[in-house]
Length: 367
Image (cartoon, rainbow, N blue to C red; front, side, top):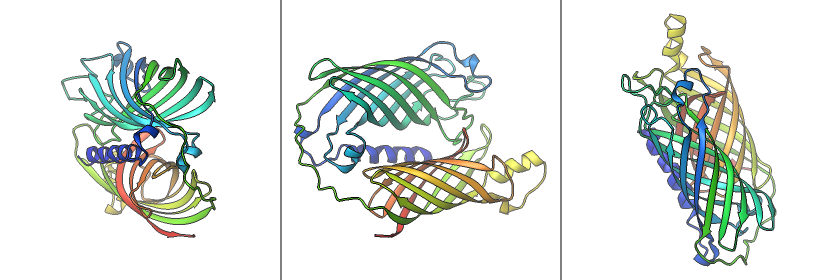
């Protein structure tokens, strides 16, 4: 339940940030995009090939908004578009994999623009409802064990303008969804596809903005502290284990876009002890559930949203149940200048450990 509400919260905050601009409707160019994908599931683990019986199909309907540099973050990213996509996924195996119904907030970054042609990279993070998760004795779905899963999508597209309102979007895409070990199995589904989209601008707009007064940026340091909670399973149908995590970091903002940081993580993970006891065949002390890590991170800032990657190593742990090194994909949404909500996926290389939801605070800033 915590994972479901956490993902929904982040979707709502991203959507409200994107569509709550104070500009008049005439300065908000919205388009409707229909995109159809044709692809296949990538069998990245042993045993998955038997589940790949047909090609996959995805149908997307998107509400897309173009930016024109009215805000600093829009200028930083060469005036991207952003929006919300509703999608239907046919996984090519109705009996064992079923269907997926997703919602995907995204940002579409221009890479190259010339006259009536544009090349973009679209990055999206959302949630998907899978109709047929693993059920013992009912299906052979060893890919995902829960109805609600996190959804990640990367799309490379060309955009060709037909006229003032109509555009064609051919592209390729990679789509992944999994539940972060909230329920097992959790091998995750990877789908590669080619796609074709058609967009229609639904309103007139004016591109003559009076831009914000952007002050000259000066690098600065800040100290942030945060905490979060999560849960996971260690076997299908088994008990649920709960966890907590805390972090303190020294971060350096080097531009309006980029931030580097170094910090300390403290983990309280109740799943570590039983997993290691099963491997070693012995009893460990309760202190085995505490782990301390040293972590470095890089983040990109887009208005109130901050997306980052982190690399860490366990400086203190009684047992090495996974790997010595760990990684984190982080999403922060700044509720105020000093308070942020966060969603974190902790992994050991490509193997998910858990999702973490929490709050953080800016404790100090150098200017």
